Length: 120
Image: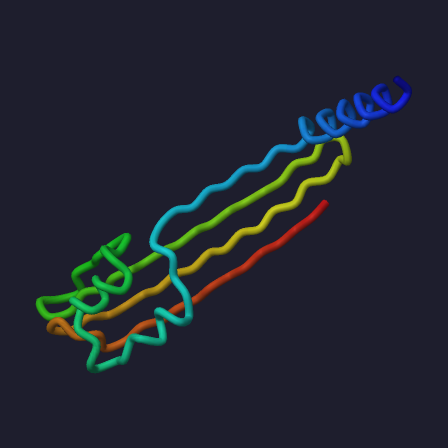
C-alpha cells in the first residue's frame, strides 16, 4: 500500500507540472532555406522555376513594363511557458527572399534569414 501511495503521489506531481507548461507554435509563408535559394542563378533561372521551388510569392510589384519584384517571406515562432518554474523560452525564424524578374528571368535576388532564441 505504501508503494501505491508513492506512485499516486508521483503521478499527481507529474501531472501538476505538465499542466503548468504551455506551448505555442505559429508558421506563416513559404519555408525558405539556403539550399533552395542556392538553386537560383541570376540571368538564367526562369520565373516558372521559382514557382516550382517556392510557390506563389507573398507579393508581386510591377517595376516597369519588363520588370517585377517578387517577395517571399517566412515566419516560424515557437514558445514554451512554464509557470511553475517561472521560465519562458522562444525561438523565431524569419526569412525573406526578394527577386527581380526581367522578361521572365531572374536578374537579381537577395536572401536573408534571422534566427532568434531567448530564455528568461
